[in-house]
Length: 518
Image (cartoon, rainbow, N blue to C red; front, top):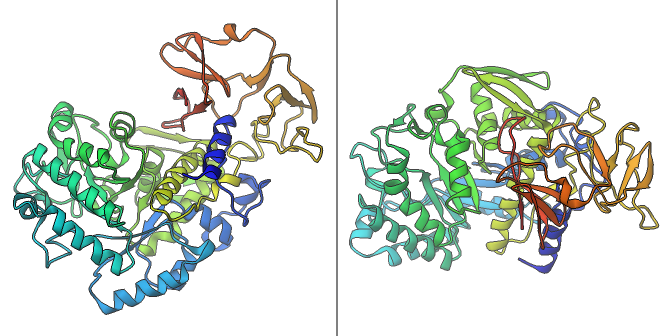
């Protein structure tokens, strides 16, 4: 990571309630959610709005017309050996210059399956050919202009009737782990990014989630001990992309499939140390698209379960959504566009889904940062447009008091935003000792802080005159930011030398989520 990127990230840590990231010229820093997302249909979206929304989608785009209509975060190619596909890839590569460059170009190129001239992964692992076979695979992908392979299959072959049984490296977790790690390292050496799939493991049940919903009854302990070692080995070997399965693991989460499970995705990021990009398996697969029958209105527009599933998957922790049916991209863009303006509030089989526009924006910010970090590791530069978006300001006209980021005036002094409600105190984040009240700047005796540590949609700020030691209010083991350099842990103030950062919201409105010291 370069010095400039590091400075931007440090800035974000200091201003922990803003969407602050790398710079783009196409959107001015004063832009707000309200200004950017003023319309509600795909056809009326501006090119900048489409680029912001499309950041987190991965889909098969085959010509420059589609590329211009759907500026995706990632593109997917199939049938690499066909001359027509190679011609499409050349056309897309020629289009991808400057601001139109896709972050990622992917292909599903598994040995023995799509790469039919190669032995199956199981055979390659047993014969000790991983290094040679993975090198040749990566070289072919690079020849076609592909920088991401949707392999290796990190599942363990537990069930002979599983759709992945022939595609796994081994029935033995440790042997599979060794071969997965070797594949990841070999791909990386050749300049191709690997994708671990299908977390937390697709090998334990008969059938195929392309065709139907599947349930795996293995216990959580068994999954963690038997299914996860190859995934952990791939993570440790440096894989930066991971695909999640659509299987329901009912002893771990008896409601959501893994691709929509807050708990299962949270374990990956919080317990297994995965810092890269999490991508869903294809959302058109019957294992998830046919799961429920639900309709919901978001920002006045009606959406079906098929539309909503990808949104829930994203909000629950996937960083990119794989939409294989490009005919549905207009609907998908419109749904996320609506949710960024109005949030989403509906019920699925009695389970409440309740996300504010702030939470949707912050989830975008977190996902975009992860995508950008993968690009940087692949030496592709930076792409993120979310630096200029303030998640807190202008989300809706009915919530004018949400505190936001304010730019310094011409003299360098902080200024009050026109979005500030005159009855509210609004902290100036570039100076935590100053605040707005009635459109004017005034000093806080100690520091301006949020009066609501849960960080929900609408809250007042306050000027605190109390000593910092008295400002911890007993959230047990949770870490709660007090200011950019200190936090509460177990009712005591701790120092955050590198800054205190809010973790992105990971659940419904009202769910407490903790912060962290960097």
